[in-house]
Amino acid sequence: MSSADLTNAIPGIWRGMEGHATGRASTANTGMRTAIAQFAVSGIAALVLLGAAGVYLLRHVGQGEAIRNAKQITALAGRGIVEPAVTPGLMQGKPAAIGALDRVVRHGILGGRVVRVKVWRADGTIVYSDEHRLIGSRYPLGAEEQDVLRTGRVNAEVSDLGRPENRFERRYDKLLEVYLPIRAPSGERLMFETYDRYSSIAASGRRLWVAFLPPILVTLALLWFVQLPLAWRGARRLREGQAQRETLLRRAIESSELERRRIARDLHDGAVQDLAGVSYSLSAAADALGTEDATHTESALREAAATTRRTIRELRSLLVDIYPPDLHRTGLEAALRDLVAPLAPRGITADVDVSPELSLPEPVETLLYRCAQEALRNVASHSAAQTVHVRIDAVDGIARLTVADDGRGFDGSIAEGHFGLRLLGDLVRESGGRLEVDSTPGRGTRVSVETPR
Image 1 (cartoon, rainbow, N blue to C red):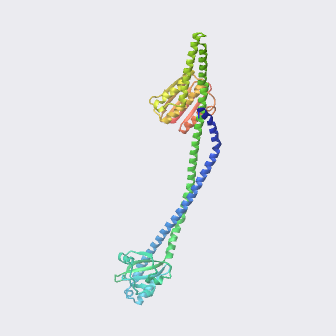
Image 2 (cartoon, rainbow, N blue to C red):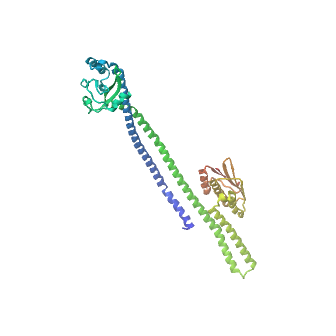
């Protein structure tokens, strides 16, 4: 595709972009709402999962806390109630001693969640039980019971109701055995054991975790509600970033279209016309050879040569516009002097003032160069100025470009008839700087650009 074809195609491309802008915005808004809805649904799913995990952990913690409380209560009952009531007569199996301990156990321990009490000797003999049919029976103690007698700690486990010593407790669904060592008056170590209803233990644990569950769920729900605005804000920022990228693309297309039209116009009105005139002059001079005065022919050839040199300068200027110099390599001052060189044939005196010690980042140099290029282009095309001053300096971290001419000026804003300056103004603002144009009819124009270094 040729440059002319591309130039003609750009307006159609831009109109197509504008035609689809509304659809893209609607699609983007729908996509943002969909993303927020997905985030909300995933948040609810995470809330449910965290709630379920919290319930499971709280149940486990509550059950463990209830068992720990059962151990503490059994330890208090065994050492504070039963141990002082163990007498030599009980160790000998005397009915009066058994009856006396019965009264203590039934009054202070049995009832509620405790359904059975047993007192064991180390050899597995049951010294006392509120179920008298077990008294005097002997069953081997397991490793854990022997470990309790040896270490003196309190232990708890789910009762195995299939064992012979537990045959009278089989009518209960599930029991928790809690046992610990106590001492007889003789110093003999005994094992005190209670059988607690497991349903009571579970209910106690349930009360614990149910008390903590609502605050946890409320906290999770609040966290979900707090995240929704944050998600909406993040999606909106993403949409704004996308819109900004689209704006930059649109401006790039606008700038490219404007630049191509200007170059095409300059070529048509300048170099092409001049070269056409040269061709006609040379043809006329060739036809006149030998028939006219040699002085007239020489004058025509010299004029054609001068026109050719002027056209070459204009073409070089257009080449600089199409492909700017490497600013970082050649330096900003040299690039600016190339920009003002075409002004001299137009009768405009240009002055470039750039400090040799000035060092700017490449993006800043490029931006200032583009701004100077557009300002000088307006000077050459519209100002009818005699002099123009271009100055670049840097103070307190701010790079500043000034292009001032003594031309006829204008009355109005940048938006009126100065599309190139408008685009540059947008670029300057996006870089954190500002562009100002001060112009008064008959008093010239001053273009100032300030941007962070």
